Length: 179
Image 1 (cartoon, helix red, strand yellow):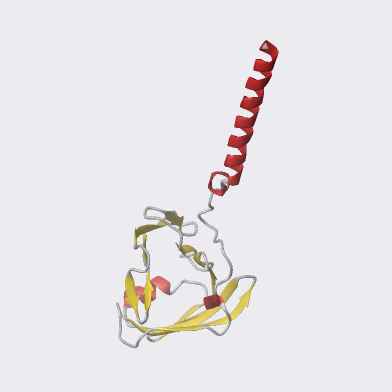
Image 2 (cartoon, one colour; image 1 turned 60 degrees about the vertical axis):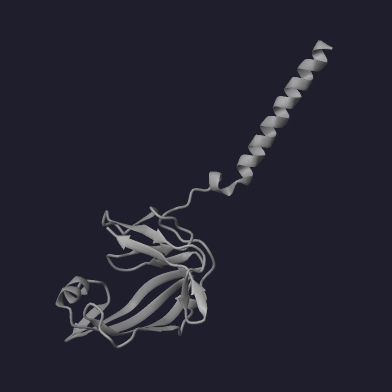
C-alpha cells in the first residue's frame, strides 16, 4: 500500500509537471520575445510596386505637394521615389544629408528610400530615421529604437476598435512620438 501511494504521488507530480510544461510551451508569448527592431506579418498590399501616395497641395509646416511612388518590391522591401515642395528652411536643412536626397530650390526629392510594410507595421530601412515607425499591435508605452541614434519612438496613445469615421470606414489610430 505504501509503495502504491508513493508511485501515485510520483505519477501525480509527473503529470502536473508535464501539464505545466506543455502549457508554457504552448504559450507563444512566454517563449518568443518580440524583437523591437523587426516586423512580423505578411507583406502589405500598400507595399506593391506602382502604389502612389499623395498629400493635398495645402502647406502643412512648410511642406506641400508631397507625392511618393513605389518603384520596386523585392523580398518584402519597397523602394520609393518621392518629392515635395518644402518652404521650411529648417526642414530642408534636416533632410539635406539623407542618402538619396536632392534639393533644388524648394523641391526636395529622394530616390531609393526603402521601407518595409507588413500586416504587422511599418519600418524605414534608410536614412538616420531608420527603424520601426509603428507596430500595429503595440501598446501605449512601447518603444522602438531609431537606428543607432540612441533615440526612440514611443507609442503615446492608441484608440480602441474603430473609433474614428474616415469616409465610409471606421478606423483606430496609434500615435507615436520620436524622443
